[in-house]
Length: 106
Image (cartoon, rainbow, N blue to C red; front, side):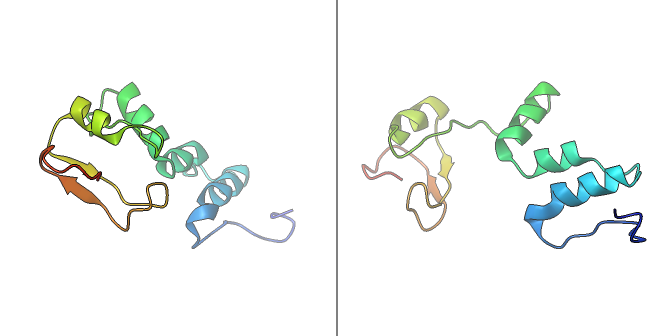
């Protein structure tokens, strides 16, 4: 349909549409389009798996949830460490922990 309408390239300015635009460009025969790479770039878990599969060093991490024990994860990783902010933990921003000396987490 894109070719029939004279559309040569798909373009987006919305991050959530990057994979869709890349897939369209691949279907249009663009050799530079890589939907798989775009999908990896949008997902931190996939980024970590990709880096590990290619023996590329990355930061160590342990996924935690509100139900898990972030203090136990911190002990396994060691200090200093960073807890990201976010809706999951209801924290307004990232937090750096230099040591285990504070009882409230983060």
